[in-house]
Amino acid sequence: MKNLTKHVGLFALLLIASVARAQEISMKWGLENKWSYQETTRTLNDDASVHSNRGSRKYQTFSFNNNSAVVDTMLKCFERHFELWSKFTRTWSGGDPSKSKRQAFEEFKSVQDPLCDQHAKQQAPVLYFDFVSKSKDEFILEAIEITTLRFSEYKGGGFSKEEAWYDVILSHAQGKKRYDVSKRLAFTGTGRSELRFWSDNYYAEQGWIAPMGEYLIDIKFIFSCAGKQTTVRTGPFKIDV
Image (cartoon, rainbow, N blue to C red; front, top):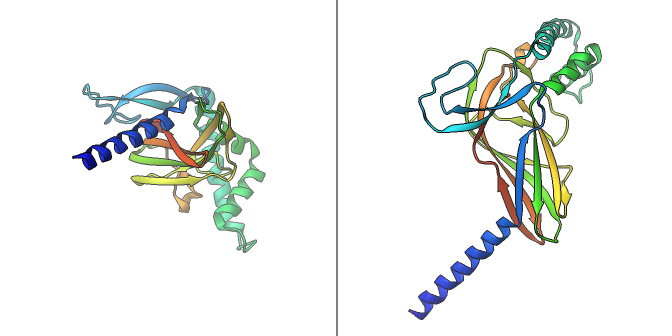
C-alpha cells in the first residue's frame, strides 16, 4: 500500500510539473494577411464550394477573400503562368544539372514575370503567432508539427512555392508532418512567428500549379527551454490554400 501511495504521489508530482511547464508559454494567434483573406467559421462539411451547414461544430476558418483587386490580378497571372509554362517547355533542355525542372521553371517565371511572382507571395495566407512566457529562461523553437485532418480541393488556384522556414508547404495527405526550422526563433518573455502557407496539391504537368482547397489542420510548436521540451498548439482550424 505504501509503494502504491508512493507511486501515485510521484505520478501526481510529474503531472503537476508537466502542466506547469506547459503553462510557462501561451500563444495568441490570428490572421496577418487581411488583404486577400478573412476570418470566418465553417462546420466540418462546409467549404468554399459546398455549403452544408447542419448545425454541427464550427471551426475557426481563414477563407479567401474574393475582392476584385485580388481576383482580377490572380486570373491574369494564371493566364500568364500557362503562357510561360508553354514557352519554358519548348525551350528548356535540362540546363543546370544541379537544379530540378521545377526549380528552373520557378526561376524562369520569376525573371519573366516578377509582378505575378510578387502577387502570389502577397496573396498567400499568412498567420501570426505571438508567444508569451512567464519563465526567465530562453525558449528556442525547434520544430513545427502540422497535422492535416482533412483536405478538399476547389476549382480555382494558387501557386506552390518554398523560400524559407516560415513558408510552410502543407501536405494534402492526412497525417502529421514535421518542419525542422533552420532559422530558429529564440526569445525570453515574448516572441513572434509568421507562417505563410502553400499547398503541395500541385500538378507538375501544368507547371506545378496548385488548385486551391480547404485544409483542416492543427499546428503544434515545439520549443526547448532549460534542457526540456515544451509545446503549444492551435487546435483544429480551417484554412483555404
